[in-house]
Length: 177
Image (cartoon, rainbow, N blue to C red):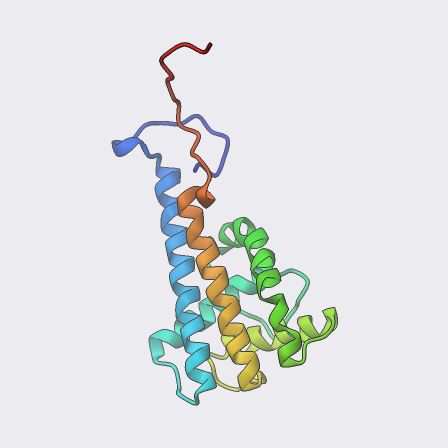
């Protein structure tokens, strides 16, 4: 699960520090995306987010803007230390998650690539404002919530190596006939 092609250095339990840091990063991203997803559902029902939830919404906005280079929101979002690495490693998962919710686009009036960009800009704006001043309709808040939930689940599945076998050494005893 190493990020770089570096020789494995054993630590307690057979994990490197790189593995531990990557795991912590994935858990943090997934948790904050899940909180943002929940908050968008709350907002669609007219309930305001808590102060902690507002912080997670803003953090999520910063992450998503660094992941999605094509959609430039208006205004400047803050920079988070180390978020560039998280964004770079998450970019493929972001677009995969967007494709997973794509069938729902038409049901909320998103029919073209340009409208997807408008939707994402509105999402980033809503998140960066901590949930206030949203330009998203209630239906689009729910779609945005679904998107962040799919993204959160996809990120956390990386801890399981995406269900693929790990590259551990194996010894096979016996004969092949």
